[in-house]
Length: 474
Image (cartoon, rainbow, N blue to C red; front, side):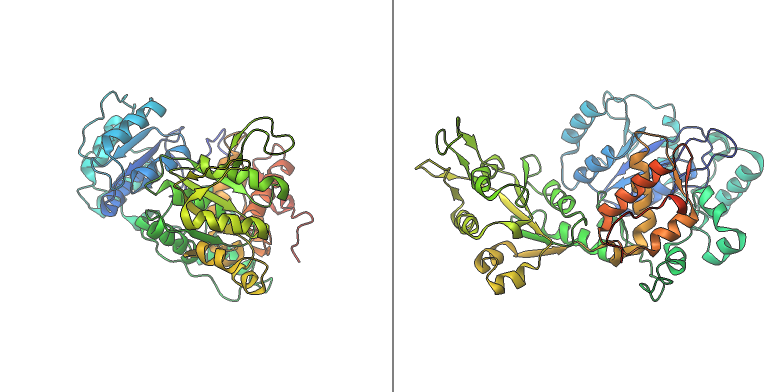
């Protein structure tokens, strides 16, 4: 679920950042609620009811997803199903209350969790639970009209109103946006479809020949940390969910800057090993002379400078997941030693005569074409086939440009935690849509950070602040 942020206006002319929420909040402070249930229909009904009451709604289908979503924003409340598909709900709530003692926690049967504080908006949560069982779009439309024409709708006025229609919250068509002015659409937080942005941008640059079609994404397929609802990003989420609970080795392939480590972390988080360590090592960042000791560990005096023994990364990951980033950079001599570990699950520290049995799940990542490298002899073919039992491809940003508005919103919201939230206007979005993104999502994050700095104290980032620097844009 994509985290949503809404800036608090300081004046009548203040503007908000990119948002998938309602056009304007009727309270001065954003109230965020996380809905956790494996029942997608229940989540949808609660989302409709809560957004009608101007709540910012995040969703998770299980306990593991809920932990990730709860870290992405400051929660006012948690609505959770008494049964979770992956975790014991009582154990989850005990840990959740320890880490988030000020969050109002309520079960979807209307019972408040033990020792949970009550939010000032507790009655709205109860109301939303009740209204999620009913429906009448017309009454909600009347309430919406009253809200726009006569000020904020009070809870008492909503007491007999069913949930709002979904269509009332969808962005307006691109043609209507064009007629009324793109800028007003961005100011209200209702962004035009990505198609209209990209058609005016990337198509003009010759990189996109037709509008990119949006696909309705089942909520059950979404992984909160993977931003984007394009078909290629949905496929990444689907593959993660298919293989997460297995011990099958996974090879993640994709260009630099596409979030391969995020995929590895999601695999670990959704697995049975989630309570054990997730240990990552970048095979390209450690000198060849030290990489073996870093992986396998060493005893005291095993080599010059080894003044004390050290446990290797593989052994540190016992019971959990070992993530070998940039595995294609590993020297051939070390590849053979790693292969022996794969075959019998035993490792031998440098300078030690005894072996140690270790149980780890191997996840590797590379930006190189390992299959081709294996054919050329640059990479061991037998090791490649051990690693590539299950493949996940992380797409370059140019492959899912329709996710650009969501990604921009995500990064602006992240930056807003340390400094005032800025908004990206239509001209800046069009310029972003024209870029080739050789550095992918990581480059986008850096470009937006640079733009926020260049904008100074201005609340709006325009095309003038979008500077691609010396990137390989052409």
